[in-house]
Length: 247
Image 1 (cartoon, rainbow, N blue to C red):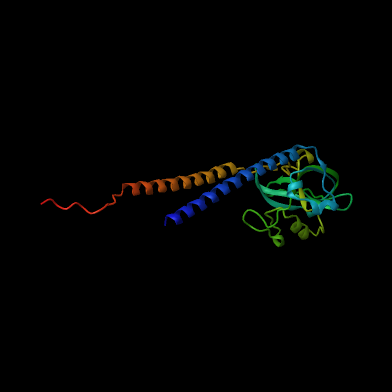
Image 2 (tube, rainbow, N blue to C red):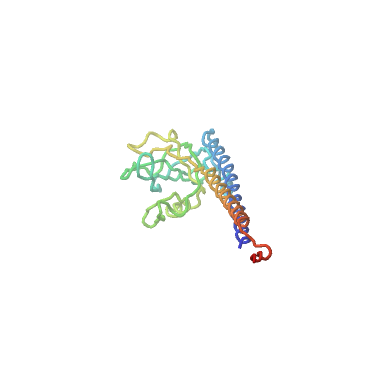
């Protein structure tokens, strides 16, 4: 029985210690990610990835990069996606931007409140937009899936929006427009520059939790061993035959 307990305690200690070490590694990775994203967000805008580079775009190399696009908005194909922002509940206004080479990228022009009426414009004059590159959000959001047939969108799923709007091949990303990258809002929208760049970093707390559990297991095992030794030392073991009674 003692061997089983010792093996179980050793296994638990090793597992908890390994999990704590893994969280320390995750914390280092997260801090590096935060630093890289901060550098991208505050850097001068660079040209957005062109069509030839689209297959190479990844979160590790491109997400939240400050980019620049030029082209004409296709307002007739704009899509409203459910949003919850510091301005309240409403929608993101995703508008296709056709660039000079004919390629199309979706631009999140910003937040619009419920019932917002778009100006009656089919295609805009040439514009230059700067903003943060974001990757597609497939599958839906707010615990609901997108419903293209009903034109109800809960996530910025680039490919699905492109299919629903008949846009053909589009960039595998969208761009969150900067606040200063847009003309003055049309009435009460769209309002750009509302991207929330925040990463949860609780890995140190998790690591301390796992290490604490490891030390608790080690402490419990040590207590059991000492208690067993104490009990053995307290036992009285008879030695030899008892003395015969005196006549």
